[in-house]
Length: 254
Image (cartoon, rainbow, N blue to C red; front, top):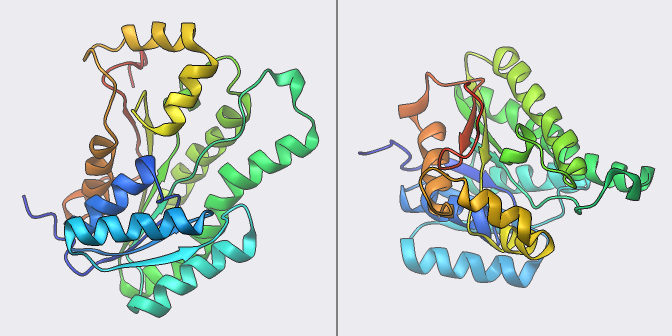
């Protein structure tokens, strides 16, 4: 299936590894021109080299920290300056530390809000005008299944990603009809982040893995394929959706 992404311009945050890397590679493989961001410049450059070699796509690395307002603006501006516009924004990053609620002070909460929620606010605020100027655009936010099926110790992530889900639903109405806004909640995906969580909470993670109906961990490329569809003209009638990509792990009925 041709997704119609040839020549589209995308920004993918947190693209040096894991799900973000897979998304950038998939979009580039579909013919999109992709600006990738990440905090660690050497890892980001290595990701660009890898994706360029394997897809032949056109990529542009913009090192930056989306926890900072000025970097959110600079990443979007850099993509527009390089490629002449913007069609797709993928809000993706790591996650705040794990731990019990009573361990975290106001500063930990402030950092979590900047990382998970305000980065999305700021990137969308910078990107939306460029998308509207082109008459169409797609925003996809990456959260996690814990945002809708909470796990003890994930409070910083759950609370801030819940804000992203609510914001996305609101913006799906405010930014329509030009821009679609959707949110993915990946389940247990085989990434460096998931392996770290498994090390910190092995018993709980083993129990969760055993409860996946499809019987295995997800692959980052499977999340990336879902993003590519939602970001493409093929997915233009889907907006305001929160979609679990979790092998059936969620027990919610909607």
